[in-house]
Length: 287
Image 1: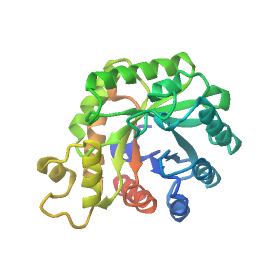
Image 2: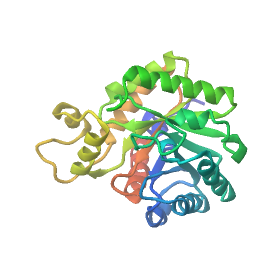
Image 3: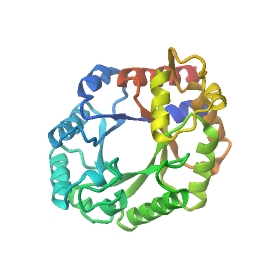
Image 4: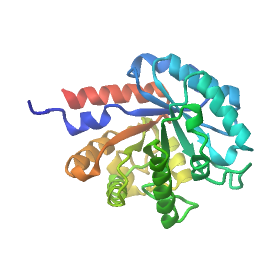
């Protein structure tokens, strides 16, 4: 029997979410709108401590979701600190999936200059890690040359494969599908077949979206944001990713070589608003 599921419904299915260590109340508020088994990334920010990060990962697990704690390489002062974090996460059943990221500090606080250093340290499996998410930047990175980004991505994917660890590529968000689909094609042409989760902002205030775009070097000129669904001349109100997701789904469906691609939702407007958007969008495109 032919699969009649729309490309949009397929793309919106099995999305992942992101929360901070301080978002546990928001997680509980959104819990009934999030499908059981959803992957929920837990950030590793400078204004959070070990207890907060572990408690958030535990809350995700206990709510029936899959915790994906972040490991911020340049924030780690030592290998001992990395292993303490992994040990605590393992105690609450939250180490099967992790996201290794470089982190914000320009100067490393310890021995890890990049997420690649954490991956090749060889300690992740010791604490039950089976799959590692790594970062992708469809529109580049404001501080890292494009050729270096590709070198890092290839090295990390190769190291994970050599260690028998699964890989997921989780991307920065975008407003424009064109650089995203071009980048996905480039990833596949380099022989990397990992699942790609495309960063997608949930519904949020337009000013807030633009502030994040400026911070992360995301293209947001008048033409791009009009295509996305808002105008730079009217910054009041909120904007959701409906047009972006709909167009992305069609483009991916037209290119079988794009492989396994899903959404990673950044909950800039709150976890509940994001989860409700995903639920309602999938209902609309499945009707």
